[in-house]
Each structure stands twice: as C-alpha cells, then as structure tokens.
Length: 346
Ligand SMILES: C[S@@+](CC[C@H](N)C(=O)[O-])C[C@H]1O[C@@H](n2cnc3c(N)ncnc32)[C@H](O)[C@@H]1O
Ligand code: SF4
Image (cartoon, rainbow, N blue to C red):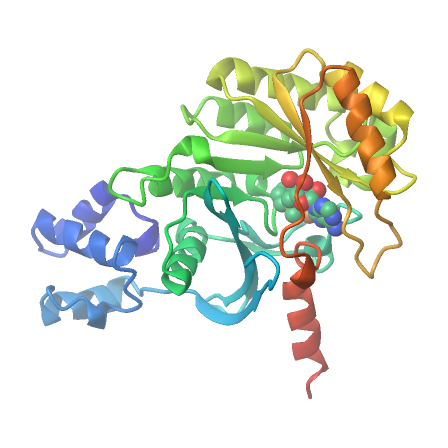
C-alpha cells in the first residue's frame, strides 16, 4: 500500500519495521497530511538515513496541478491534476455560505456508461487510491489557503466501483489525526450498485448517500443508465431504505432533468409515489448537455413545474444551484478536452 493511504497505526508498524521509533510515524503523518509535504526532502526533522529508506521502500507521490479555471461569477474553481502515472483527473472547489466544498473524482474515467455523462466516454482507466482521493483536497487546500468543510464524491467515477479505497479514504479524511472532517459533511454519490450500498450501510459511517436516480421507472432509467439493466429501482430503493434504517442518514436522490425524457408532470407524479415513504431529499439538476450526445436541458419552466409537482406530493426538493456557470462544462469535460487536445498534438 502507498504510504499516504496508511492509517497512523499502520504507519507506526511500517516505521517499526524500518527500525524507527513509533513517534517518527506521527511526525511522518503530520508532514504528509497536515504540512502537505510534496517530498521526503522537506521532512527535515527526520534523519537523512530514514528519509533515504523511505524513498526506497515507499515512493511518495503527489498530484500535480496542471490547470485551474476560476469562475468570475462565484469563485468556483475547476482543477485538472496529473497523477504520478500521467493520467489526469478533475476536481472542483466551491464556496458556499456554509463553508467551502470540494467535489472529487474517485476513478480515472468510469465504466458505467450513463448516456449523458462525459466521464464515461473513454471508459474506465483505473481506480484512484485513497491517497489520490485525499490529495485532491490537500492540493486544493494548499492552492486556496482555505479549509475545506464539505466534501462530495461526485466527480468522475463510480465510488461504489472502488469500494475499499473509498471507505479507507473516508476513514482517513474524517479521522481525528487526519483533517477531521465530519462524516456528516461527506456525501458519496452512486449510480446504484446495490450490494455495495448494503455493505456501506454496515460500515458504521455517518456519511450521506446520494443516489443518482434520474428516472421514475425502470424502462426510462434503462434508456439513460445501463446499470439499470442490472438492478431495478425497487431493489435500489430497498437498499436506500436499509441505509436510512442502519445509519439514520437521510437519503439524497439526484435527478438530472433531460428535456422530453424524464421531466414530465407524469414523471414527477410517478417518482413521488415511489419515494414518498423514504426519508429523503431530491436534488434536481437540469442536465448539462455534452457534445457527444443530443440530450437537451429541460427549460426553466419545466424544471420549476417538476419541483412544484414533487412538493405538492410532500417531497422535499431543491433545484441545484448552478456553480461556476461561466466555466461550466459537464462533469468530466475538462479532463476529456485536455486529453483530446493532447492527442491532437503530433
Ligand atoms: C459524475 S457522477 C459521479 C458519482 C456517481 N458515479 C454517480 O453517478 O452518482 C455525479 C452526478 O453527476 C450527474 N451527471 C453526470 N453527467 C451529467 C450531466 N451531463 N448533466 C447533469 N448531471 C450529470 C450524475 O448523474 C450524478 O448524479
Ligand atoms: S454518471 Fe456516474 S456512474 Fe454514470 S457514467 Fe458518469 S460517473 Fe459513471
């Protein structure tokens, strides 16, 4: 395992095996997770011999900032980072009145194939390690100089398709010796991989589960999301009910409104009936069109009507505020256009 993905206890064992005292592990942990050291050479309170041993046994890798786009409207920042193997990923920093929020990627690409999503067009390249997920937050913290209070795993990738790394990442991020971000301020979004939703409910975590529903019935969902061929909405909603029963955490349903596909009043009525018994919140997101597909955004009026209809049936609902509208591209597009441009060059 890479050294920045280790817990403090694991690091103590590793240090001991290298003949070092356990307090060295604390110093090392502090350098990596609080002082955001980019290399062992910066860790000047560790002996040169120890640093050499570390370099040999545990190469320390950090994300490299490749590009930042900043919104003139609200200060939202989109980051493109390069991983040590040359792959690139994107992350977003948003300023809200309740604090700063970061949206991270969990994989390089995605294999789920949702029709409206730019992240999946090149398929899955690989899963991110816990430290690569952490480092997105660390590098943004370093760049902005501001603490992060909320985290959403809603960037490229399907976190439930990278389960063990995701859970380890959440534990590291929320641990007292880590950034100590409250688990209640962490949201993990999934397209609905049912067995792992059950597993997550038993981890003893207090994170919010966001479920990307996007349709009121299986037929419509299958048109938008191939994963719907594997798990039915009934199965997914049962997994959500179980998550609430086990954790007490209200479920968030994400619903991307696609013009003429899933945004009618009948869709709203059917959706309300299906989720009315679940302690939940619905987040409506007008779909962000990508050039590879011909899906269109629902009009403002249709979005408002959809919201009103859900409210009429007693569902708690918000329309997601558009952040960084001037730098907006759909999720995964910054990475995709960077790769396309790199491929065009001779
Ligand atoms: C990029 S996904 C990552 C997390 C996870 N894989 C999932 O699907 O929930 C985060 C959210 O963005 C939504 N999304 C993806 N592409 C979109 C687009 N072009 N317009 C609006 N929402 C989009 C997804 O449906 C999902 O609800
Ligand atoms: S919406 Fe989520 S699951 Fe679907 S392709 Fe995009 S990243 Fe993957």
